[in-house]
Length: 183
Image 1: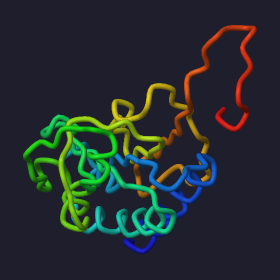
Image 2: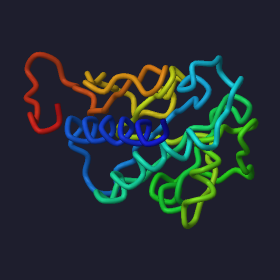
Image 3: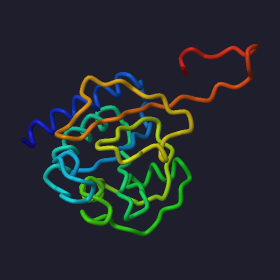
């Protein structure tokens, strides 16, 4: 079962990265409910094993491309973000003092915190793309103009996957010219 979860997570993140065309140093947010992957209600069956399987599919693909992982905590930590300290510095974000645990932050955020080389918690981040495993609402951590992505791998276990990339705002009206590389 865990191998299949890892495989689907890897396939989904590769699809997103292929569509989003992120550059090295971009931030990728992951919101995840291991309980919904298991087919249970939010927070009812948190699983470190499922979270580890998801992490094992996602994180290596981000690392290969130099993309920074931002793991969204659950609502018990107000959807705080766990990421590398360098992401906080790049985005000029204030670090907050909290350490996620499976029932207060979530299993995926806990695995992320325990794996990153210099993990910190932030209240907010502005990610360039992301995936939401199980409908935990990552939108608050995406840049302002989110573009939904269609994925072939749209389920992991019993959880739906929603994904998005972001783009700069179009400004200037009908006379403006736009850079097609940024759409």
